[in-house]
Length: 438
Image (cartoon, rainbow, N blue to C red; front, side):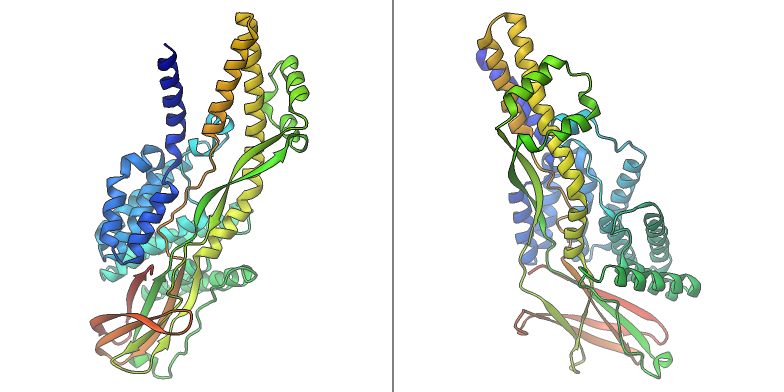
């Protein structure tokens, strides 16, 4: 009987923790494959672990993580189907209540389905548009651009947090609107992009694209090249200890505890002061990469450096920084709640059995369950690049071999890639991209 209870207890705790999403080791394994250019292997590993690592609870995260290695392999149709599923999953979550539920209160934040922050949602539209453009499907690319513009208009008007727009995605949509002849929409998106770049100037390293426009540009074709580079920081769990004396505000602020009996509260007050509690917090850890710059060379000509236009790594850090206050409040409240539940369970068991030893055992079991299930929410779209770089060139109509050179932080060329026989047409834009995670 004792072993059966032990097995049940362990199974319960494991089931409560199972919805936490990808582990740190899993992220490292996938990132390592991508760094070596093994995007096929990264895709296979993610697909293999759809149920084991992600599950129904994190299906949005599964689709997001899977889309990047698919895009890197030029599997445009597959990637867009995956991203469409991600967008559908996000829309389904929008109609669900985001209020704190019992699992979040008592177990951990991982009991809630994963919800993508603004910058991740905006990038789904960029990636789908980019895939469509590469397939020469301007019409569907424009649909995604309009969805992006609508989404960002909504977040600016409804979200009060600092990061409620995306400068690069705004700029990208303005180019697509220009391609479709929607010049008024293009101007609005370009203005929004410039405003957002200026707004986030203090922490966002990306700058508004600034390229020279040749005098005879109307007689030439344009090629826009995106370098999707590096590895976005991933979240890890960090533990900190706090004195109980400093977190009692959580008792008064937590409406869910109003029904707890006075004797339990008294017992908690009597036993908690002078102690400390360890809580788990998410923090971002840089995921190192050695390619820090790139340039574009056309048919052996002078290399033209790419410009940093999107700082995804900095955006991830700023987003988590904005979320920290709410995370702290939830985590501290949960710590107090778990302590109260432990005291309440211990008192109830003692009264029921009239045996303090049984009460102490029950209290110990509840305490152990609390410790096992207290996990920081470390979920994020970890397969994203750390940055997006861009080059914009005007060329006479014709066919070209376009080489990308990739540099380390000392300016040494450590890798290259050639887009062969690229057709440039007068008065038209051609879009190319290359993913590196080395």
